[in-house]
Image (cartoon, rainbow, N blue to C red; front, top):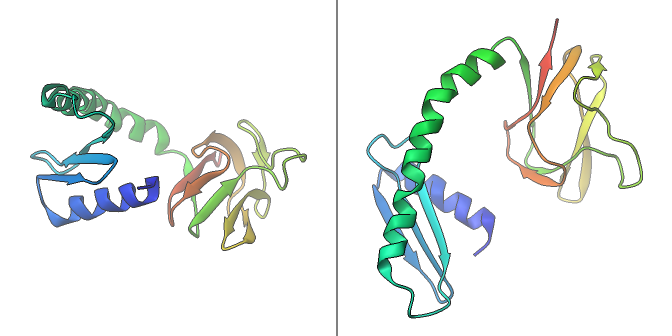
Length: 164
């Protein structure tokens, strides 16, 4: 089972309203718990390699992310306040994000660089077609939100730009 299938399964479980889903296949065991607030599902992905693996560590591993999720929740409003003055450049298509036109060429943009409307920010490859993503705003690149050669979804934030 690849990462894309797991992500789709998480989305499906979150939309379905189920509180917990367990999936066991030949070599993989996945448990998804959505909790009471349905905001952040807890996912446990464990390859089933040895039958001697006890069930107790599985429960502890599933419980460990819950406090981390609670710790992140209070920070989210502060981060939203910091980024509210920036313009978010989002992906117009699904594909693979690239920061360079080719491996031997320089990056399109870097953090701190000033960009103008129409400047190429990145390339997104979709179905063997390389689509240049141009800036619709002028300003300074504050943050790049996606790693090079990473898959991106439609409307996923890619860059934060300070228009001032």
